[in-house]
Length: 372
Ligand SMILES: [Mn+2]
Image 1: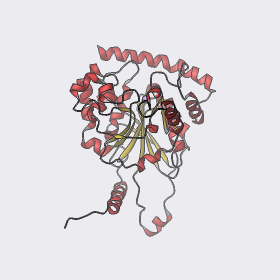
Image 2: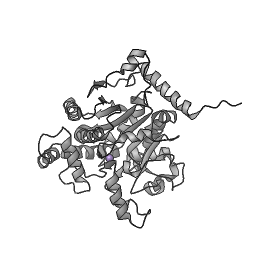
Image 3: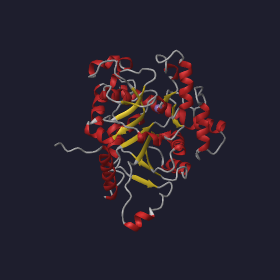
Image 4: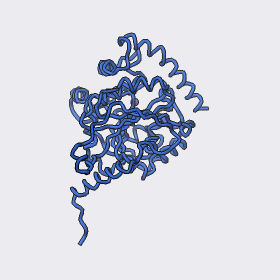
C-alpha cells in the first residue's frame, strides 16, 4: 500500500522544518564578502510565556521577507515604498526587510532607517551593501541604471530560512496589506508576477528575440517590478545564472535588461498575480482593453483596489515635472514617512536639483559606455 501523507500533516511538516531551521541559528545573510549592517527597527515581540514555561517552542509560520534595492539617489523613493508597505502590513505578522544598496551613503541609510522606525511593531530592517562587481559589465539604458539588476542577487544573498520573498521596486507606493501574498498557493511556480500592461506577451514585447526563446510568442510577459519569488525553486532552476547568461549573449537587443532576460528564461512559465499587485501607471490605458466593453470602468476599479501603485516610466512622482497618475498617493505616502524635512513643493525642487541631473548624467554615461 502506498504511503499517503495527509495534506494537513504535510502542512505541519513544513512548519516543523521552518522551526528547526530557525532554531539551528541559521543567520539571515549567507556567508559572503558582503558587509551586512543589522539594525532592528523595533523590538520583536516578547517570548511566548507558555512556551517558556513548558519548554515547547512555538512552531513558526513561513517567515515573511521583503526586499527592495536601489543605487545612489534611490534612498528616498525606496524609503517611501518601504514605509508604505510596513504601514499597511498586518501588525501581528513578523516581517524581515532587506534593503540592497549599490552606493547609497551610510548617512542616507541611517536616515532611511529613522524614517521607517516604529511603523511596524514586528519588522526588522537591514541594509546590505552589495558588491556589484559581478554586475559591472551588464548593459544599462538611458532610463535604466545598473540598479535594475540588483534583484538578481536575492537568491544568493538570502538564506534558506526564507522560501517566498517579495521583491518590489523602489518606485512603488503600497496601499494594502501585503501579508496576504504569503497565504497564496503558488504551486510549482518559481515566480508570481503581473503581466506587463503594454506588452503582455513574449511575442509583442520582444519579437526580435523569439528565435532565442524556447516558447511560443503568445506566452505571457511579466513586469519585473514586483516579483513574488520562491527562492528554493530559483536556485534549483538556476534562474539567476541563466538570466545573466542571456543578458550577456543578447545585450544589444535588450530594451529592459533584467525584465526581458527574466522573461526569456521563464519563457511563460510563471504564475499570475492579481493585477492590483502591480498597477503600472504609465501604461494603465492599456489595461482591460480586451477584457470588457468598459475598459475605463475596469481601470477606475483597478486604481481603487490597487495594492501596489507602480510609477513606471522615466518620469517619477518625486520629480518636479511629473504629470502622471496617482501623484497624490505618492505625496501622501512621502509625507507620512519620516524622511521629509520640508513641505512637498520645496523638497521636490530640492530633490530634483540635487539628484535628477546627476542621475541622468550618470545614466547617459553608462549607456554610452555599454554601447561602446
Ligand atoms: Mn519600477
